Image (cartoon, rainbow over all chains, first blue to last red; front, side, top):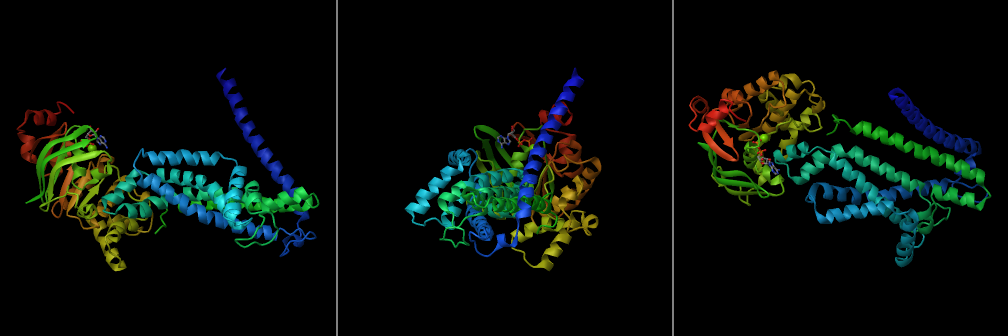
Length: 276
Length: 250
Ligand SMILES: Nc1ncnc2c1ncn2[C@@H]1O[C@H](COP(=O)(O)OP(=O)(O)O)[C@@H](O)[C@H]1O
Ligand SMILES: [Mg+2]
């Protein structure tokens, strides 16, 4: 009986893993199979036209959008986490409210963020459809993720190290930033990369806030990112092959992120003998 | 000369009173051992001496602790300066996740030492004082977490010495170590007490006998008896001290 049970369990576990890998593999293979043959230099022309269907402006916008949104959300998110873990008193009511609030924020669908951005940034503040409106909307969207992961990373740092710092007469600030923060960085980075993934993959919230113009956009101009570009190409129905090719590029780009993250955490994790 | 004079000290964790009317002098450049059953307040009193008790949120202290004639419990005390002068070594070795060199240099840097030659010299001197220099001089840039438990504890002692304190507080510094590492630390303390005031919590009575000049026996938050180590162990004046050192409880 025992043996049969464990065999069954084993089959279930391997089955689940196999299924996951198969689905993932199929998905990637299909996109690459459809997309790679359609890649051409035209797709990387400096500006977009309905002849070349270039994804280059969208690629540039994706990078700008990612950098902008992260630049806004990371400092706020990480510093809030530092406050909540290191400075606030245990059981602080305010902190508990913020925590509950961020958890709720994390569960809100992105279309709601999009509408919020549309009403506030595009409309009320008259920024129009622009990278700025989009980036700020996405920054709000990823803030809970950054806060949560940073908080967890800080909480994982043993108190013994904090005591060691205080015991040497290093004040709160020095102890937090020189002793506690460095070992928490790999965890914080992984939250940032997760957020970058969400930014790169976002469409709905951006259509309402950054718009869909296929140009290399400045802060106050409308510009589509790669995901929005794919969505637009597919919807127009005239260049679905190019949509696949773009998706293949996006896929490669996003697959690069976890690899990068693994690399970073290997470099700075586990004792970090090299850190200054 | 007394390094610390503790007067009518009461300490509360919330509504629980952990120290009750403690009066105690701790002599300069001697080793003082705190003994007593666990939970009797030894660590608490030790942490009061460098205000590490501040880190406990609902901790309240009454009375006086005079250090250098000044009451360190006063709100005017600069705790960072106090903790530079009164260093601490913890029960479990807690080297920072940095290189051996950086571990030692952290304290001096905190207190304003910037010059590389000066730091290099402090690092070598502290590691030598902690009897660790020979073992690590070729791997100063390697992570401190790669050292053995005993080496880590000596590193923590060196780290505390690097800021040139006057007092070294040690809370059961050998309880996480093997007998050989323990012996090395005890030997080290015997040397250190010539230069520094050492206050050491221990649950080993043999250890107190071996390293300390004075012993303080605690019970349920009170100091039952304090005196010269030899005298306290050979002819305890309080019956409870006798019971404890003869292993009748705790
Ligand atoms: N942070 C704290 N909060 C509440 N009670 C504490 C705290 N630290 C210690 N105590 C209590 O105070 C008493 C003395 O503790 P401690 O000084 O650690 O004893 P010892 O070091 O002699 O074993 C114990 O009853 C312990 O439970
Ligand atoms: Mg203790």
